[in-house]
Length: 275
Picture 1: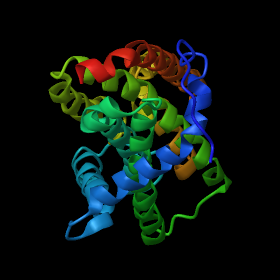
Picture 2: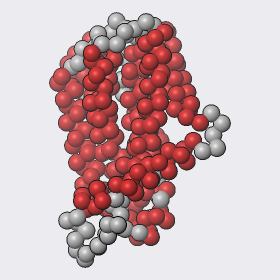
Picture 3: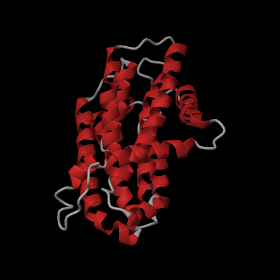
Picture 4: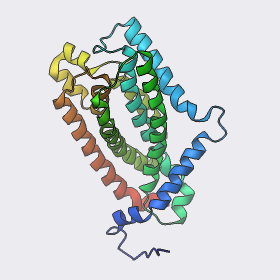
């Protein structure tokens, strides 16, 4: 059995190595969160399908049926689905990770381990929900007889980008939620507000047609926009990828990731005292 030796003043130097050494704890925590999420629920994992499905149906009905928004040449339900699935992954990852430290206060105060394991293991729960919800996309493509293209092979890349986009704000909000408990009220508002300022129910090409490249670049300040555009490019096939706004969105996601990791590591020493 491998022994863990904690040396005074060496925790900083060994931190990233300890993340790997505690990988079994990461697996245990992730599996625990997954099992607890659906324990004693009546329909279990079907919630991962019902919630985004209702969002897709409502969004397609209002924006596609009533508002007659452009759909980039694909069924509007598929357009909305291609935006809803990565958004739900992002929002669930943000919500789950931001509450992970407070929800494991007893564990933090008793034993040593890299605290970053907790928010990262919480993201696994969001990824499981996301993987299950992909059944919606399969069903819609069969229903509308919409054949996939080779671009679908790039979805794992855009999923990784969605993880990176959620990891930065997740780590930042997690640390802030420990120090300022008011953030537990702010986070649901951020998630709900983000749904409407993100191009989930409409395409960014519609924004470009009305406001030009400037409008599209302003929208790209939202880090999840690049992920949603990437998903639509991969799934819809007819939606062009605006590389300037895509690169801007991804760069902002990486900057937010750096800020989130930096602030989390800065506050990590105080977690056990204030939690």
